[in-house]
Length: 463
Image 1 (cartoon, rainbow, N blue to C red):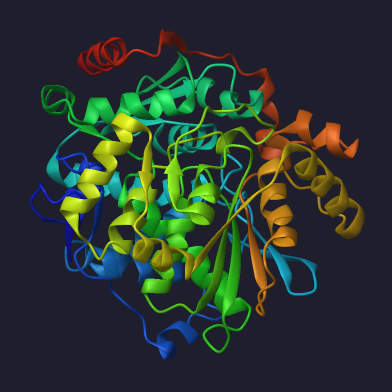
Image 2 (cartoon, rainbow, N blue to C red):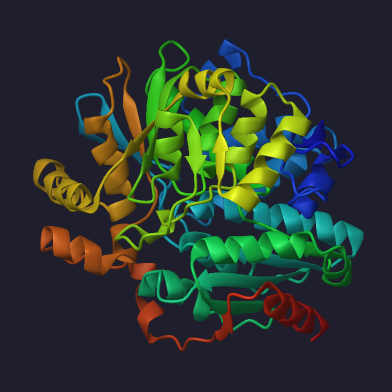
């Protein structure tokens, strides 16, 4: 299995190199040269299998012969043994043909754990074999950072530096990062937005001197291994509801588009997905792009669903690449122009390709709050504001004749103020995380300046 850059100016690499590099040297994102697939019988056989077993099957299709199948199975078993629910991603019914996929039973109570626990073990296996230590630099709008810290803290072959926008994430999200005491973890509060943090990370990856000096890598959803791991729960939830004998639809709370693109990957592999609703909050760049054909960066607005407060969705480049029939010159032109002019006019044929599967729906703040309350009253389920955006989007999207699964991306306790304000009910932290509020915090504060942060990362690696 070989991986190519969406921008076409980097050589094709194998699975291991794609994972360890994160971002391609030309600034593009890695995708498989060809998409692996499952037959209908192979998908049907996933019914009733343990989550780790399905994950191993999916990951092995992308790893090829670079990692032995028995090693992949062991890594998956270890990764998903860290989850508090035996099913890893259980389904909960909230209405006729409407379900929640609870993705928050991992160590940091967010869907990012599903990929990050797998990725940490993959890194440790590869780097130990190479006797190598890498520096992970990641930007977070709230959940990626906590999941990365929980997954990589204390590991021998990885340093982790997490950038988060100061004052724009919840206290619980922040504490999952800043209470880590291990020497291989650094957390930086950036005086700016998540888009600023993400731009700094991309600048760091394009700095070849820095990349070589600190052996830089990334675990944001720019890393294709994250997308692979997230595609697994599309398979497990779909087969539980009758796939491949019937199609399933999904509503995905969306900021950086990685979780929704993982559904595209599952569909490319043969899973019958009828529709993916791309559910956004007021930061609706994705919804607007799918509705109007113009991918146009707006001002980031602070909302009660802060992990989605993004106006530059990095994984959209992967979908654009597929939509323009893998034309690397066009993809590079479009995203270079976006960096300079803040917009892309999507070619009509490419937009038609996108909207054959995806539909964009924006849910405002008032509707998000009403959805949290209505869901509690109607089902007894207390959901977080991001999940509420996904549930609210179902009601506004055109009806689809298929069961709809909402990806419930975080535990309600990660956003207690927003949930309590909407429902008059205070969500409690699960038992195993209740000491979080008592742990001392440790972080540094820096301006949204790429050079200052690159110097900080270099000093961290040298120390």
